[in-house]
Length: 458
Image 1 (cartoon, rainbow, N blue to C red):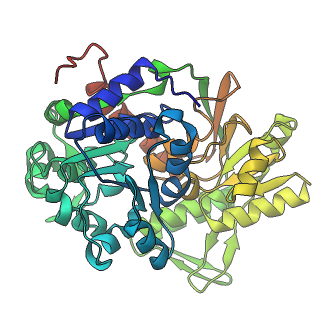
Image 2 (image 1 turned 180 degrees about the vertical axis):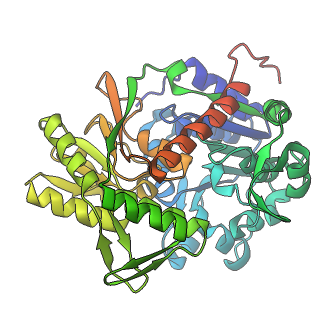
């Protein structure tokens, strides 16, 4: 297929070509893979500035998306690609083969650097989903930093650079520029731009940005960063979000409140103990969804409020395909049982065959887990409505899941995102948190948003 880049794609390609370090924050559906591959081709064969490229990506994206994009476009036909994903034998064979681009999944970065015995002689590294390196204590981060001085050019790609707030940016830019812009140490970064938020005596649980922090941080990174929102460059369907409230009975409310206040809930067949805030959050989310895991094993069911709501939504859809996002395994089990009872054609969207059937319109209700569908899945052909049965705290997974259907190529003029929310429960807190983080994300996007009249002599 002949590649006819949009103006924003031409700008992004040139930005990568002219910057030894670049952070490309591209919204879902803007073609970041084809943009990066085009820049790599030019750097390899026109400018002779690089000779061997390593792409680090999520497993499915590295295995499927990059090779597919490479074979899709005519102008990239001379690029040779080796996919180093799979068994140790397969990875080793791929890395020792003759190619221009070598693709590895992020989980095997440490293996490549510290265990494979293969010389790390890549002069360009592309990190697809830069947010995967937001944890400065993670093994993959430390391993990549060991070899980072050997790399002349590095590109960080993501659509969600600050999925959990501005604190994430330190590690991401440390990988890119060795800490030149945001500092070499997380402690100094934290002291410069944040103040303790939630704490217990001397123990600080979280930090919040100082009033000036956002503007100053964005200013420091803007010289190597461009950001683009899909709605600014390509026709996108209208995105409509709504809440479907469900309400607990008095007894159910008492149970929920008791768990929340006492952290211990006595059950007829076991006991659930929330030993800390994180566990409590999970337990309350489960309870809001209608069931909960017991300490001794097994699941205790409390209510069917969300299942009833989902059934009502399916009925109102009148045969229109629905994508349903679940979080806990017992949510999936209960949803499947309900689908069987009401005789609805459903499938868990996981395998290539299920993806094909969904996009062909052969599945009425597609069940999807955000962690397995966050990256690399195109589901816009199968439907335009997403129902959140259970929410996630992760803004990145939340936005990426929505982007499976709200993206370029969606034929519907409107995409509907419906949240089933249990009234006066942690569901409301999670949704508010997601929206609050979205504001931070939007602020970052706006602050470094690409101006297509930018001086191209850089």
